[in-house]
Length: 259
Image: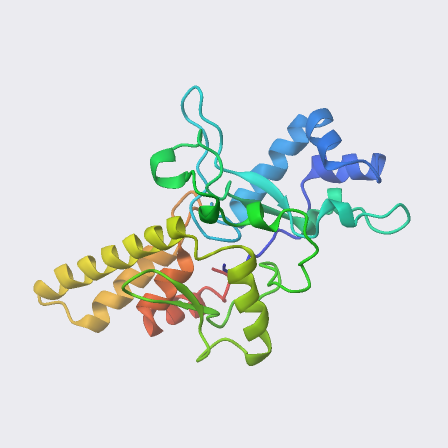
């Protein structure tokens, strides 16, 4: 999980619908304002640089017949928290995140890599569901972007709280986040391990060419952490950030901490 810098201006279609129907449901919005729904999806993808807000896998859109997007709009505060005279979380722009299907959808692109039949392999909003746990876990919209919250084990891809850099007041929430969202699902650990091994191989190849380690790390930090010309980041940003260490922190700081 990384910091999500959400666009302050909500998509016009959502804003217009919410103004006209302030207590309407998300499901009605999707059906009745399809163009507005597409605007929401596109802005979320842009804001999140194409990554799932929870596990940081890349969001994949369907390209072939029979496929479905590995993407859906998640309500951080559950829609069930809406009350008649309180707050409508259904249509709250700052409550909407983009997430993957958490390994639960067999028809997504690259299903052999992304889907799992095992229930213990489901992650993100699948185990979260509508449970009232938002006070116990981290909100991607509010976690600090300037400091590293998580670290990983090189031999397995397991996700841990980085207690050398994560603010102590966030330790419990960070640990609960890993548990409640099942961010150490075997499927995710396998994917993160592949990222770590690729970085290892790239560093080794550059060192064999006689390039100093400091230059190699700086180069990889720039190429791996900065979004491409379409605004898309490589998957597992936080894994790359942790692995490249100080070189990564310099690139993030140079961005104004907006990566």
